[in-house]
Length: 114
Image (cartoon, rainbow, N blue to C red; front, side):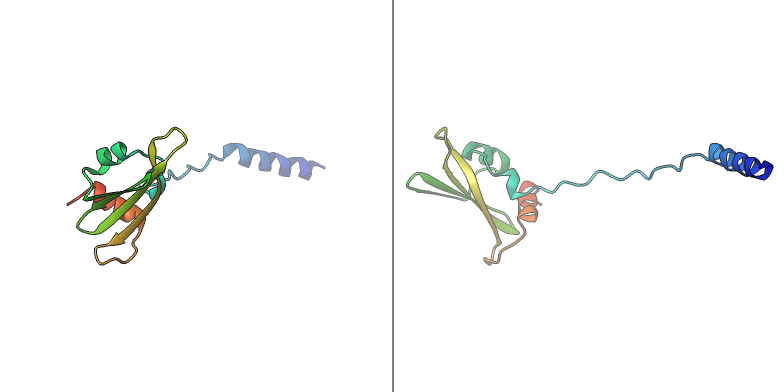
């Protein structure tokens, strides 16, 4: 019985003496802009974000705004919302040669032209 008490005492002493291991601090994730951040914006908000569009096409009640940069082309399609204001419902991105490209990368390139 004494041995059991001694073993338990040593185990408890070992637990009490342990210091918690420091937690590794994870860096905050870098949030890439995406087309999802453009969905719901109005035409004036897009213009405020990217500048004047290179192309503007109105068809019926819809509007297509095209923004061009050295790396890619972004087409934003706006349709009337429940309040009547035109809002972005879809975004397409492609390279200058017409090949689909990553939307987040294209948006970033248009936001940060070099």
